[in-house]
Amino acid sequence: MIEAQIANLLELKFQEAEFTDCFLIELKLLPGNKLEVFIDSDSGITFEKCHKVSRYLEKHLDENLWLGDKYMLDVSSPGVGRPLKLSRQYAKNIGRKIEVRLEDGTLKEGILLRSNEEGIVLEEKVRVKEGNRKKTQVLETEIPFSLINKTIVKISF
Image 1 (cartoon, rainbow, N blue to C red):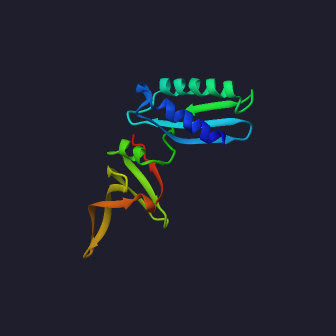
Image 2 (cartoon, helix red, strand yellow):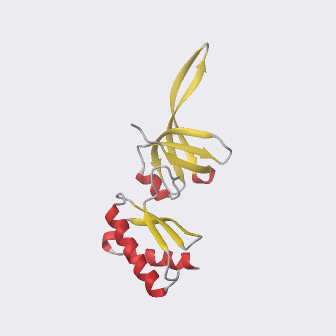
Image 3 (cartoon, helix red, strand yellow):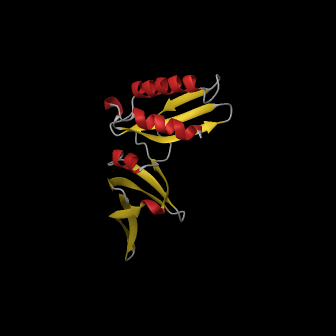
């Protein structure tokens, strides 16, 4: 498939010194020969890096005619409202407020404290009843990736 060929091209590009901290998030071929490529970087993706990756892909698409002579290519970062998909994205967002929807529908919100290949640790504030009063407790909750349905970084102003 074309998507696999493009993913392989990106893997080659990401071996270059300037792009070693870059990684592919998602690649979608849409109707009308529109190709969307979402990339990120451990140090933060820049417009310049997206532009260089776009030119690199255009060169190969034009030479090989994988999408014909008319296509639309969009190379960008995943953006603020898009869910986190890879463990590398979690590591990059440590210290930020996130919202995690679990597979069972439970919603958790808090500060992302740690991340590893198995899952994350979330600092969340929970209201608990002590006698006739409610008290807020700060808990560290470990959440394996296998239980996560969707995670969004919350923007604070």
